[in-house]
Length: 220
Ligand code: DX5
Ligand code: ZN
Image 1 (cartoon, rainbow, N blue to C red):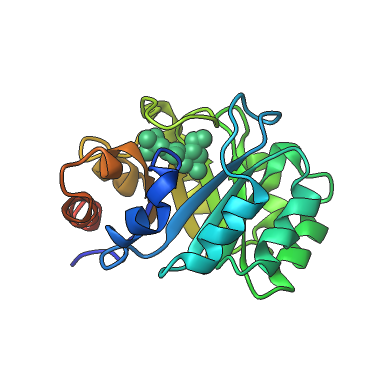
Image 2: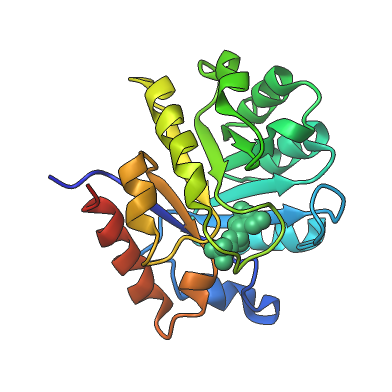
């Protein structure tokens, strides 16, 4: 039996000058579009401006999953939810009032998710297990596409899956996901897979999404 998985291409390194057609290249086979927002303060890189993000959110033909790597998650989280994102991920390291921000994100009808950098431990955030819709376990340091997958995060993925138990919480991994690594992350317990360079550097991005899905579904 195959397990249900979702594949979210990241457009961090896609060509912004033709961003909507970049999204269209994968929209038929992808579950959601992963939108990385970097302010240059939380991590050493910047990505889309607010106007660019709004253009992407309103123009995308598939749901948008915003990953906020910014210093003011408390303010930005609800703002992205209100703009129409299907899900909004805030970082535990950079949110002053996690419970309130989750509530504010949900009040706009979006799914709320908590992300952990490689140095953060899931055991410190078990208080939020009944509030969140998804956890994101980063498998690279936040900032850039094209980094190497940190297999040492798989223990954290397994521990998070165990803590989730029967709750309907999705478990996302982000960073270095490719045809070489996706089965490892799936076997550890992840069910949502963000893939940037693996998808957009492939000759046929849609075929790569389908291949990643099959590898994740069949991982043991
Ligand atoms: C890194 C971002 C990722 C990035 C993934 O900070 O959160 O979403 O786009 O890119 P790849 O798949 O190339 O590691
Ligand atoms: Zn991301």
